[in-house]
Image (cartoon, rainbow, N blue to C red; front, side, top):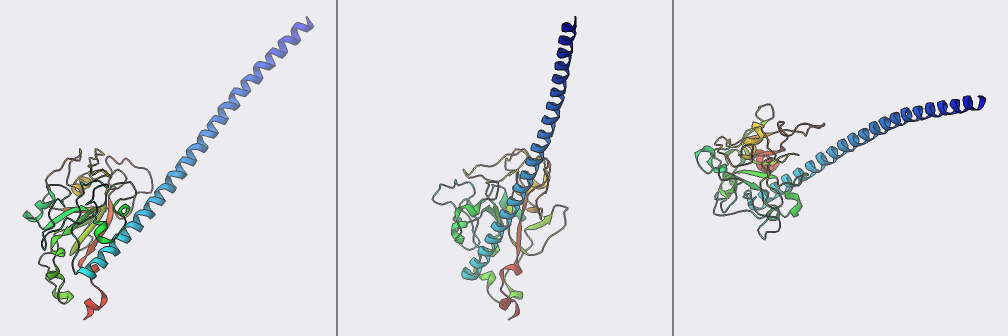
Length: 277
């Protein structure tokens, strides 16, 4: 009898120990899961910081290269053909022509030239080879081509000739650049360099193909002159929206605006001496 009772106690204690072990295991799994989630969140935040830093560095370098190109050539380069793969011999070269032509496939889409009822503005890839930059500078931190928009008057040396206040530009408000709230950022914009953000909707990738992120955001569709399926769509306003900084937390990039870039007005391309002579 004593033996049976002892055995029952041992069995009961074993069950209790097993129960405590399962509870402890569950708590341990929960703690580990929370720790992993925290690590992933920190890594995601760190990744966004690195991407924002890389974006700023590339935009600074492209802006400086455009400025230097103007000083040397007294004009701005035409965009490159965004539909060319990186392996193409003409990748990164401006699609040039006569003054203010910027033809030969420079457009980001067949509709970009509808602005102002004519062909006053063109868009395509940043002509990194023409600017003397490495090929990788043509791509944003998410692996897609920056889009480079140009008021074609800036491709004519005659318009940069003469004093700053009397330069030959006849209409420098074709590029209507606004922030995410719809506020105008600057007048007399001659060029815009735009990243289509983490979702990349409407951008061209390394193979020269359009990125379809199924974005339903109207501002993103305006920037790429395409629809929610990244198919070219008419847009005669050439309204460019720029979000000044990237989101600091994860968002639904299908509906949220994440295009980031820089705009360059006429004053940016003149030296202090040119402005004050």
